[in-house]
Amino acid sequence: MKKQLELLGSYLMLLAIISAALRYNQLIVIAMFVAGFALVLDGNSKKIAYLQMHLFLVIPYLAVLFPLPIPREWPGLIRLAAAFGIWTLVLCILFWIISFFSNKHLYSNRGK
Amino acid sequence: MNGMIRFLRNQRKTDIILLAVALGCLIATAVQYPLSTTFPIGGDGAAIIQRVQHTLTDPLLTIRNISHTWYPVSYALFSSNALIPHVYWPTAFSSWMALGQILTGLAIGRLVYRLAGIQASALAMGLWALTPITMTSFFEDGTMAQLWSLPWLILFFERMHQRSLKGMFLFCLLALFSHPITAAILIGTLIITALILWIHRHTELKKQEQMLKIVYLICAFACVIIASAALLFKKSIITLQFTHEASKYAQDMFHGFFLPWLLAGIFGWATIIKNHASRYVFFTSMGSFIFLSILLAMNNSLGIGFWTNRLNSYLILCIVIFAAIGMDKILKNLNNQFITAAISICLIAGLAMSTFVDNKNIYTRYESSSTYARIHPDELAAIAWMNTNLPNYADVYSTIKTRNYEWIPVLTSLRWKPLEDWEIPSVQNNHAIIYPIFVYFTRAEGVPEDVWGRPDIFRLEYHNDGAMIFHIIPL
Image 1 (cartoon, rainbow over the protein chains, first blue to last red):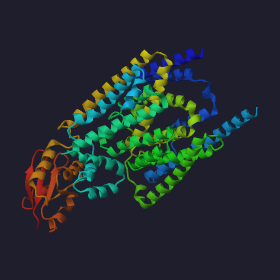
Image 2: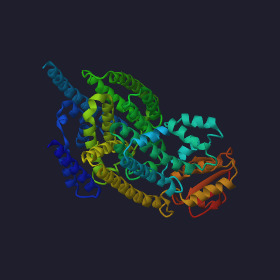
Image 3: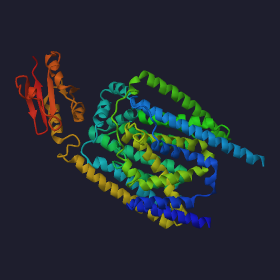
Image 4: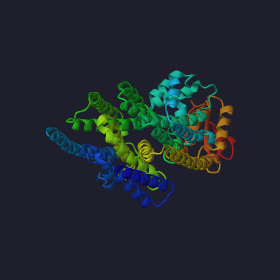
């Protein structure tokens, strides 16, 4: 069953890629890809440490969605450095929180 | 060579065909640039050539020129063109750009081969073949140094994956001294990774990974000190002026022809990090690089707009690497070798052909004398006239209304100095200047009335439809 779902998911994603290359409706393409992606996911994806690695993609997405109110009168590179510094800090804090839970989980498993 | 043959013998035929197609596409879209244009596009070519063109005749001057730039490694490598007999530098520049594009593709292929095997490697090279002009601006801007910094950056990650400290150190140095933007991204990656490794200290890393972690922390600390010192001595960097720039590639990346590869890239990352525990340092570094690349490419969305188009190329690198891995995983799940190869070849070849045709139109537009998208043949004719008819002690002056004037010292042996119109009297009054010449490229600017109407002071020496050359008679 798992193999069949993986195959179906792969076909869906391939179809989405080919549809996008042929400039089909973007929403349908994304929907197909997400559905295919979900079908291909396996048990490993639920691990906390695995989720941690997705922060590298999620945080920049959040940064684009919620631009920081950095004063416009500051020099451009200082604004760039400030934005990067703050979002890096957010990334590190979230990493630390997840790492704390994953370690706790790891050591709790060891005790059993 | 024998190793390469042995390697190819061990591969499946379908993989070798796919690899050949991908290499063909990579070379075709790169070589198309020097073959379709008669002169470099972009404004930086002249400044780059000027620094290295006297490598054989005056090596000390070249060393001095190279050591005073931000791109010593890129310039030093480019100066090797001086060894070609009777080199024509503008043509050599275009070919060197194409070579940089191919080398970057090969470096991507090598990294992806380490991560996911030969099929993914071929896909990655094929995807990189789709990027010239359409997704990166190297050819159009003439940013040779930045393009030539990419292979070292990628090979740094490849060596890290192989846990080769010597290789990492070598490619780190090459990347740091090839281009400041690449250096800044590499330093940023090192610092973010070092922070995350420090946070993640409870996890039991393998012995080799532990060593990498220590090296990382030391390197990041050294980089912070070096970068701080550089900023301290070059305070002008902090106040660097720039105009807000929106990303011209965002439309294609999020809604256009690169969208499928963006999606495949996300899937590729999700796939590859399943095994991240065994190579935690490498994947954390790649993650940090992706994090920085996205922020830099989208910095206009953060309300900054700093060189958005030039910074886009690092995100394209990430997308190409992980899209190839994602696509490879999708195709492998189909469990049919023939279908997999057929789909890969059709996709890569079809899209590369489409890119080739699109780029052909763009190069034709640049070559057209009516569009004035690069230096005009009339301007080249004027420069050639100066080279053959003016004495070598002549001083050539022009405004800076167009960067085409920068080709004067490259294509002639004359001294060239940019001036504003109001500075002309200072030239006229300076008796140390024996033979002052003022050039106007008339497609970029009109000749001022003060110059045109004073034949007693500004004697017209040469003119054609695109240029006027005046000899300034000293007072």
